[in-house]
Length: 439
Image 1 (cartoon, one colour):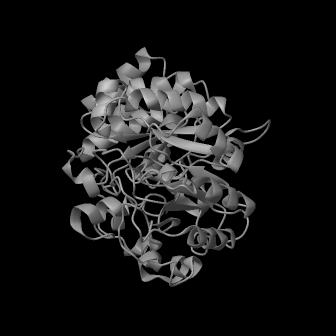
Image 2 (spheres, one colour; image 1 turned 60 degrees about the vertical axis):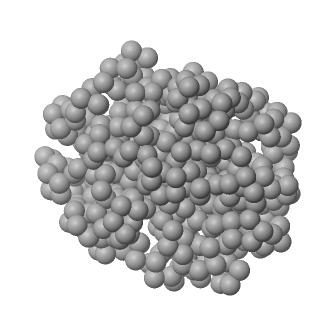
């Protein structure tokens, strides 16, 4: 399942290391909605904290146990729990370390596998809340996800859950999840969670098989209501290695479609760091009155997705666009596995240590794995030469999964450095924080 969300922020055994927009929600509204006399929001947000010393979001894989068999599953989840999982006491110690990063506390996402496979889930959520954290949970849509379970989760202190929706029909979604009936349970849990007072983030893994479902999924998000729609660009790891990848050109089309529908639904992109580049490009092109299709060389997939979105009324501006946030693997995001291994992301399996052996803060701040990822001058290939490298930087997880080098260029990006036609305006947006709204 996926996590609830921000960056492009919860994560799950099977899906994105994203984050829940848990209490990113209030901050986002403040950042996006200008008052009288205020400037329009910038195209990208930047966290106020120093991400070299404290993460914006911590994602904890509470277990790898899960009764589903999702095609994209990062964790290759299995039905049984691992006896080496962090115990309740271990997990409480981890949460104390997260709280010790100070105020504002990092977003805290409990993912899996399916967190409901842990009988101490409610206790853990309650302890997180007592420690001053705002826990979000990424459950799988199994028979365990009942109205009573959701109410109990809320009463324990959770405020956000994330649910995965990878098709607009039962046939598409259930095939992706490996079992029948999951689509219906997902829609039911979505409604029941909202009735229980929980916010819901909807996660969609983008693959070649569900591309044309995206406008219909966006319509469901708009009509049923959600805190956030998170589009996850597949990282070929775990079971996801068997799925067909998008081309770089198709990725550009999808990200520009996501930007379009952001006028009607709150959208974020996970493992799609170039969505921040797209946001800046589209902002400048809009200011210049330029044709974004011609300027960005968008293709037939974009045209088809946009036509479907127009037909569903998803291009009409009914809300303030949500700017993507400048957070990435090891640079504001940290992942802790079910056994305590610490890595920059659940999709970037480079262990920097274990919380059973070293404090999380020490690992995050000093590990060579993390410090390298926070240095844009270490990036190679087109990413290293790109003028957007400090605000984008590409998916380090995908670079590693495809070529074995976490600092290599993003394989699903078609942008050629220096090719954007309005370099003077771009320099003003990127210089001295000009392109970002700080949160």
